[in-house]
Length: 381
Image (cartoon, rainbow, N blue to C red):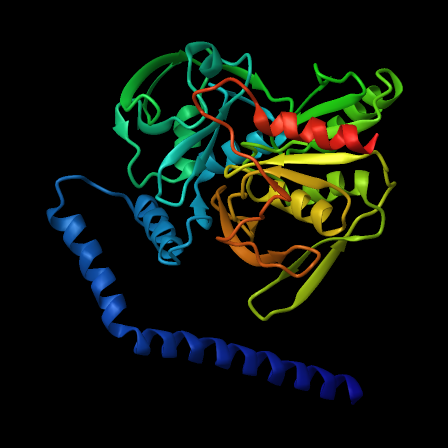
């Protein structure tokens, strides 16, 4: 008897859920009758009169991408199967391409953050700050970063035509670049020329191996080179994996807050450092192209009084994206959270101001920012 009552209640429950679901669909249809009618009309006109044919799969993908674009969020994108594959390869740091980091600036330009040393783009003369205007003859106007990266990737041995505008020269350049397999180390480590007791680590991006590379490089600098102070260069680092920024922060912090994130309901989660704390005197170099995960690391070390920041105000990307794999093999990259530095600062579209503002002369090879960082470390050791 009890079982009968249980199954009867279960049946009522699922019936209610089904009723509410169908009601929701009908309500959405009725309240959006004009928009749905327009969509069906457009599809019908394209099928009947359009010069260029489009199949149902292409139409669905286009509609899906359009829905995401309607958010007017440059960081939220529908990724087709190929683009999603490219993103995974980038985070795993091995792919076929030309070897550049690309960032979309506040004016929508696709800008080369930095060519990776030793890669085809670097060898051909592509430079930091170059604005990409053409990829294989196609204009890059209104092109997303993901789309640009997808077009620049390809099989090793194939050729890419890249057109850029170089503001310093006020002219355009065209490059013919042959793609290669790009194995991307995120860390370059050495001692400074001015003082062999000061280590210098360039962190290019935050990918799956970056935390281990940072740990290994620091260990070698401390044990082999016997450094007494460290400079980490985050200039031109456009970011990467959120979790990796926390892992690298944990090399220098232990238990302190690294970053807090809040969703649309303002539910907050605090991420704290774990592992071990390295007490070596530390300076971070930052500039206007230090973004996203770079700003998480910089904000964590600055707010916890663990490091001094030198350079220029950072980019100001205080948003977190989550990637949701989809059934068609693609994925949705969606802005799901806003993040705050340990002091509770919202840096989105604002950036992080360094403790010492130092500008380099673009026409000079002298690195005034690095020189200031060395000066600060020397006063501490």
